Length: 311
Ligand code: CAA
Ligand code: NAD
Image (cartoon, rainbow, N blue to C red; front, side):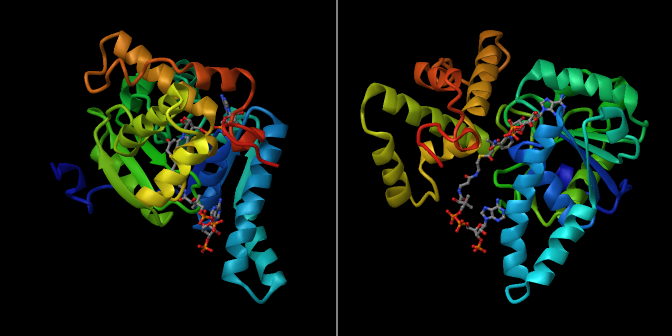
């Protein structure tokens, strides 16, 4: 139904201050793009070291963007990068991070328990007006929201960005049965201000993109495990034969093998507890190859090695 998009002129809470939890691949990208579009951002991670990595990721990405914006002037490139960083505050203190937050976006590890713990704590720390959103790839938004008070659940939704955030145009905006129209409109408005194209999907496993993309990634791993073809040939086949920008192994390396493993484990728990009719037990079977690589710390590009090596 189109119900979700009707009444776009209805009440909406403007977001001037955004707080992002988790400064990894996704959180750093979300914070960067929000700041690029004039939203004040606070980025919160567990350690100063993690935040230093977030800053390096933003710096690299912004350099590419600044080079294109101001090809002829190093000074203007630097001024642009500084202006984006001026809008970003980095902190390891969660209470301080949400002091002025109109919207909190969570982009921490893909684990339901850890996400619920964070939101339980934030529900107590934040003002009643603060909107909460999760960038989860595969978990249920309403299940995460259940860690918060009844009143907060009307202000809770999903905003699912794609990697690399500065480059990928899409955001999936998810409303649960309890998300209010006002919250939904505010989330759509933030996406628009960040110059993203928003699509809407019910609160289902993987929403639109990952419900289609993740089975494809796991099927590729199973193909490799069976010895049907090499990773290189499977990647070449999907790029040259199906026009994908990356092959499935390049893509898993890009997403992170730990995140892929978390998605698989989370979905398996759902199937085993009879909570996910649309997922099959074949799809969510454990993968020995994926588990082994994660155990060895081969998490993909971010750790220097996954299915391929990176320098
Ligand atoms: N920051 C800023 N700009 C970036 C960037 C970044 N991090 N990464 C790429 N770009 C820009 C480049 O500057 C370049 O811009 P121009 O075309 O204007 O010059 C453009 O993107 C293309 O980059 P490259 O030439 O370096 O490389 P490429 O053509 O191979 O593109 C890619 C890189 C955009 C990542 C492309 O390979 C791609 O689209 N890959 C697939 C990505 C994908 O499927 N993402 C979804 C993953 S699943 C997910 O996110 C959901 C989940 O929950 C797991
Ligand atoms: P990542 O491993 O790169 O980063 C996660 C960050 O969260 C780390 O820096 C970690 O220190 C931090 N963190 C963990 N617990 C925290 C807490 N309690 N408070 C503050 N920070 C905390 O992971 P990622 O790839 O950025 O993924 C983050 C989320 O986004 C996951 O839910 C994932 O499923 C989702 N997602 C990932 C992708 C992708 O392609 N990687 C795409 C879309 C959505």
